[in-house]
Length: 217
Image (cartoon, rainbow, N blue to C red; front, top):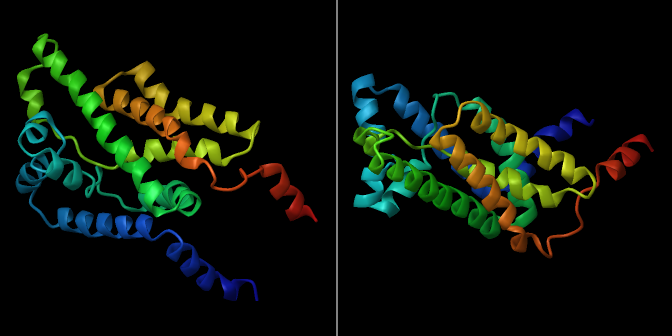
């Protein structure tokens, strides 16, 4: 009986986070399209849809929007899992508008900060000028911001363990082999944490202890 309810429960879950799964569907289509492009065309195509310094200086709005429609690596399944675990939960909790606000803030502001740092490095001669056209696209900044804001979805003291995990995941690469993208991820996490005002009035935080007690009874 319980297994018969799974399809209906899955459909209800998807419908409760429409923005998440529409975005994910777009990523599926764009990934399939990339797989059908010759490698020489793909590189030029993605470079025009990157949030690199060149594209941001010529058409920033288009760069921000189009860069969030593509994923790096070409494998969609990991994003299905990540979007379901993080984005869908955040959208269900915050509502679509507030969830989009967190995504947009993390994606835009972290990009501006990281690309600004890259521009300073180019001007100082630490990085070659060719970096203005580097490939810089994807959805990882928005994901980092949403993962961070979900800290407030969890009741204390459990939220501190979750936050420590988020900081470890995004902080370890910056500490071991720092790059501008790694720096952008940490900025995204801080932006997500700064979105606390958007979480007010969104219900009681989830307490894992209460959930475990309910499962045992």
